[in-house]
Image (tube, rainbow, N blue to C red; front, side, top):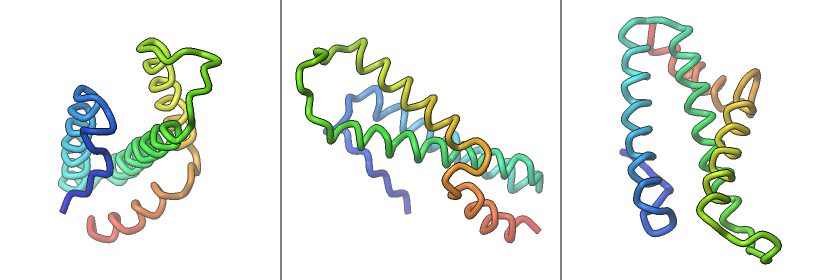
Length: 113
C-alpha cells in the first residue's frame, strides 16, 4: 500500500510528478540494497528517505503560513523556498537526524540477513 500525503490539488503538477519519480527511485534503492546485502547502501537509502520525509514536512508547514505581503509571492520565491527546504532537510538528516533513518535501518536490516 502506497500512502502519498501530497495531493495534486495542493501542489503544481510538476512537483507532483517529481514526488512520484522520487517514490519510484527509493523503491529501486531499497531493492538494490536488499539484493546486494550491502548495509552501507541500506543506511544511505534510509537517510535519503528521512531527508525526503523532512522536506515534505517542511513544505507542508510552510503552506500553513499566511502570506502577509512583506514579500510578494512569486515563482522565484517559491523556487528559493523549495531549494532551501530541500537543503535544510538534507543537512538535518545527516548524522543522527531526527531518528527516523536509524529506526528504519534497524527494522530493514533484520530482513537482510
